Image (cartoon, rainbow, N blue to C red; front, side, top):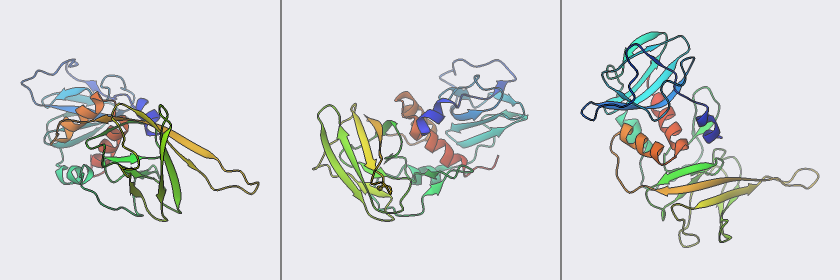
Length: 253
């Protein structure tokens, strides 16, 4: 799923000047959230790049940097200054990171060119993807399923205690809140989310499951680059990818 694909996305840029191992604390800097191309390896996801840095890309290179000023997508060949021409994406960032409860039915946004549903909110737990999930409030967890066609029931279980809770989705429903009275999730704990597919003609039903580890965030992050750094530091790579893809979709390089 996303976590596996994320690991294959190393940075794809070559610097015209010296490679910056550490960005001076006094300098404004963005964070690399997505990169690919023949120069992969120079700038891994999570690396900070100064706004004043000049980056030279070869054909096939592409790098996305979140800065305090917005989103900068650079695509080679060409030479670019990180801090120049960033696209303001505050409105989309605000929508993506909204934490108040809301119901979502069909019509999930699809990843550009991928044909894969993309969650409309950074804090929805994808029931079809394994990985680490950063959340603020473990008593207000909402599960999201990429395919909202047909009714489906998911079971979330704590393997350490065998405590479990069934979460039913009705037809066309994409998001369902987890009842904290039925099961209280804990940060730093791995949970299994499973579901059964409809029985085949021979009467067999296949069970699929994912493993999700939860991390509780304790600090508010108002800027996209700051939030991205916090997610990366906590290993919440699925959310970093969602953040990058969503903000990048509003930018025309």
